[in-house]
Length: 234
Length: 230
Image 1 (spheres, each protein chain N blue to C red):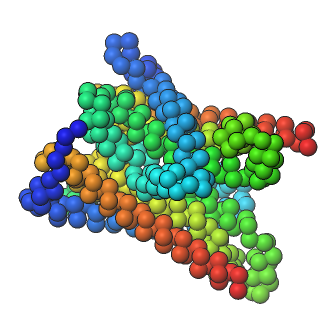
Image 2: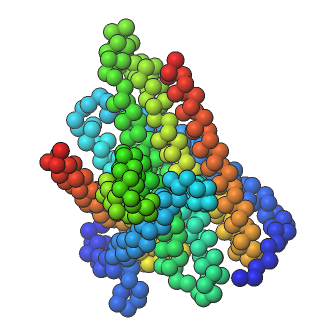
Image 3: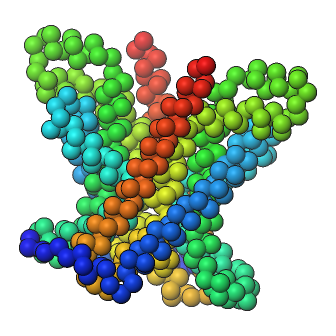
């Protein structure tokens, strides 16, 4: 193995801004898919608590479908499959504003993660004594108020470690969007690699950026869980 | 959709074999089995490193686990695609690249499963065995690991399901597996992407549902056999 490292090749031709733009796209995807996943996941968990049989079956099917099919297949299904059901003008417009790949992969990643988040929250809710809901209801709160003000805040606190893990996985999974041609961080790395052949250098840069954000998320999760467990103990 | 299935079920099942490489569903399952089997020894080594009191074992194992947790699998695939030919000085097939990336990736996840299994055993097991005169490695081999591996069997099978899903990334480097076969069918039909990819999703769905059922069955068998003993 003789390979001389040369990072200077990566500084020209607007490559730094390509990597930076890729990182921003990855972070934007992470944020949007996270919001979608957590909103929908909370909704799924709360609906499950209602204990309506038909609804339970529907949600269980939704969860099983999203957990048992690879995320890449979901992305392909949305980007090629679902998009083809929309009228041509709509897709044309989507591509004009430059977002087909972005929007569909955010939807796919968000929906898949929502199934995991919903299940995590459900098991966290089950760890909360039912007396909490009864007490809240007897104080005059409606069911939804009791959920929003009493149950969910505690459930989120209990579930912080698993939710941190889901957030981390979501961040990593945004890289799958490069398979449909989105220039996010991995896609930008690939583009620069095939233009410069400085494979080792550019992969090193991309790897370092991924690891940096991931470690940040891990520390953030550890900090939140430490702080909330201190608050719970009080 | 049924008509797509009846026209193409053979290429979804085995790809172009015997006129080309084995592909489709069989390749997906084969890839997952080979990767996880090869990842297993690595997982045990990493787990032993993670619980080792010696820093020269602890730090490298911990670093590997954190790097794997922090990096997308696709980056491992690209690294393997680039590094493997450099390391062994010959060109390498997509399947080998995919297996190499999966082995490291799954090895780290298996390590955490095995580690939790080892740490869930009462410390008295280790102490009793050591006081009977067995060395550390012999205790691990004869007392700790057999119990820990048995107890974590359900988690390891769940990891197999994850691996099956992760082989779909082989599509990105044109490994002939299930997703690749479906994408090829889509390229031939051109006008029916929704049906083709729904069919693909349903195939994974059914496969993994069966595997999940198997995990649950094994789990309940293990629980009931324990009840009898106690």
